[in-house]
Image (cartoon, rainbow, N blue to C red):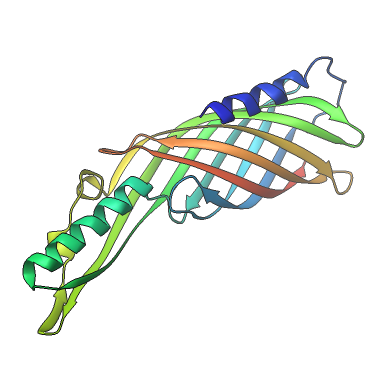
Length: 213
């Protein structure tokens, strides 16, 4: 979190002095990304923005995070599965995996802070909600047999899902024009979802295509 804060502050520093920049009255964009800070996965989504004032736009976004299971939860599932396998059969071995996906919607502000050559740095902050679901796959094997473990392996996180919880995000990046009304974006974002048991804290680096109006 400290590195996230320092990164956002560095981008904010670029805002002084700020060059005047013509802003699109509205835009749509689509993005794809890789997430990290937990088990890792992919993300995709789309959004729209409307000019509010000056260099500030009101932005809305919806998307999907393919796997944001906290590492702490995944480790707990592995440990429980191993314990249960040994209890069921002497020398029993477990194979297990846990995953969680989130569908989300966010509304927030986006601010262009500094123009560099033909590009521009921007900051963004948003809040909303995410619907989180989780899945556990686990089985045991031994010389005497094999069986499923899903019903025996639980955590507060997986017991509480599916659930819809508050989500917040902050980040920033660089926008580079492709044409008169189009641009590509490269950015970093930190997001948190306040799930039961263990909150989801995830980072992502994403690329986007934006079309202005």
